[in-house]
Image (cartoon, rainbow over all chains, first blue to last red; front, side, top):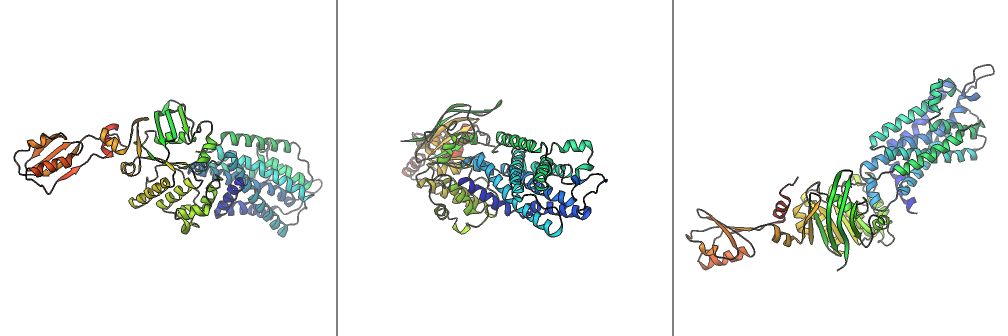
Length: 248
Length: 301
């Protein structure tokens, strides 16, 4: 109950920051429409060089952007919010009133889930209105993957918020990580056009693995070791987040 | 008399830096206990150790019978606190803050009651960021007592407030005490300590240098009171003969008598019996400020 109360308050606070909300909800949509406008949805034909894993660009991007919206909320908003609360003494105030680190983390996770879900639904509705793309093999499986992504990215975001000292630092690092993931992690240029070095960097970004496991559920394409890697990123982030969490 | 706080030789270090060297005092149930000292003396570190927000490195501590080092979770549930340099999210509304904090201790009053009690009902939908400094302090006081604690720690409550808001905050602090709650008040304002506190520990250079009531401290450390008046009497040796008088200085008609105890009354009576009733008679009693300057060597920062 108590945990839910903090989560509810945090969610309301988040919604009262209109810029953050617009940013997390609108940015992935804008990029999706730009890419859709540029690339259309024609899959590469036989004999042509394989691109977008052999499906149409929009069939590739829609599941990829489900992963991206989760990353946007968790990697940009959560670290900035957490570090800002620490900087201003809000966390210290919580701590003095016997609010635990688990509770703070759980509240962030709940906020991440609700916002990601809202953002994801918005994305699917918009994409459905405008584009013709391959439907999901199983929406239920996609939703399951989506929930896993929220836990993973939220842990990663809470970890960033735990180690970065100020809101400014958290925002800068969050944006940097997000843009690197956007361009190299399979949500920007198709993975086939990246150089080898870029592909190697991509292997270290959570988004690349998140895109692969979402596309596995959506398109039925094999995700390889990505489940394992994403699981490892989740666990390491969660452990480090709780280990390095500071109240002030 | 029940002791709610007992600190014996509290010590706290950060690496080589000593934040608190040796602090001992005890606080009895129902009193307003002041911790007074210049900035950087170790006041905040002391109370944060007592609240279990920091771990002390040495000494014995007991707060409400609990050890702040090992039972900090349980302790924080039972105490209330107002921290220096803490804040709430700007967009958090007053009622949301009170509801959130009052839910921490099941024994506390309903949050609506807290809202009424601290005159915040009309501000219930205002966001924290829109409150004035005085209103924010009122909210912090309400939050500190929202879980019906037996003991509250208030750290630098009135720093940055205008004189009017300070007075109002003092009334709030007295109100907490009237509820039967013990108050530990950290301050660097003399007048605040003098007006509010039953007893005061003066901390300087990370140690307790004096503990007593305000009057006790003044008696022991403040030195002499000074009585000034004008007179045409040529011979004032009868004043010097008084037991309370320590010194007499004359500059034309202007006379300054220094001494202790009931100096003013004795001097006035003696003058009157010699047919002199000066209209400009004035006394400057020693204040807590003199105590403070005397025992800390005047290094107020």
